[in-house]
Amino acid sequence: MKNAVKMNVLLALAIMGAGMVVAGCKSAPELTEAQATAMIQAKYDATPQVGVNITVNNDGMVQGATAKYWNRTTIYPNKYWADFTLTPEGKKLVKLSSWGDVIKWRPQSPTDENYSIVVITVAANHLKVRDIKSIQDAVGGGKTVMYTESVDLTGVPDVLQSIAHNPGNKLSSTGQADFVVEGGAWKLQSIE
Image (tube, rainbow, N blue to C red):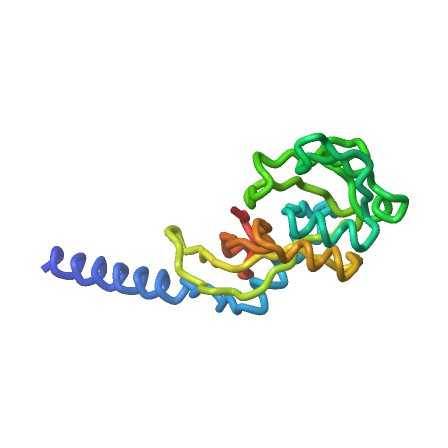
C-alpha cells in the first residue's frame, strides 16, 4: 500500500511538472513581412553608403558620350579602339575602376558586343530591401526570409540610370536573412 501511495504521489508530481513545463512554454511571436523588411533595411542603413558599379557596353559608351560624360580623345589605327577622357561633368558623376580619368576602350573587334568597362557612381546609397518572398521556419526555432535587394540609383541622372539598365548590369539580387527570438521578440541574426 505504501508503494501505491508513493506511486500516486510521484505520478501526480510528474503530471503537475509536465503541466508547468507546457504552461511555461510560449510560442514565438509571428514574424511579419513588414517587421522583416524593417529589420533588414535597418541593417543596410547602418552600413556605409557605396557607389553603384555600372557596366558600360557599346551602347552605354554612346549614351555617355552623347550626354558629355566622356569625350573621345584618341582613336587607334584599327578604328575600333579608342581612349575616352571623363569630362568635368562626368567626373562629378562617375569614377573609373582604374582610378584615372581615361577609359581605354579595347574591344576584340568592331562587332564585339561583349566588351564593357565598369564605372562607379559618385552618388553613394544603401541597398534597398523589397519583395519579401517567403518566411520559413528554420532549424532551432528561428525563421529564414528570402527577399530581393536592389541598388539605389537616387541622385544618379537619367542618362546614367539608363546606362545602368543596359544588358550586363545586375541591379538586384536575392538575399537571405536569418532571424531568432531574443527576449520574446524577433531579432535579425545574419544576412547572406
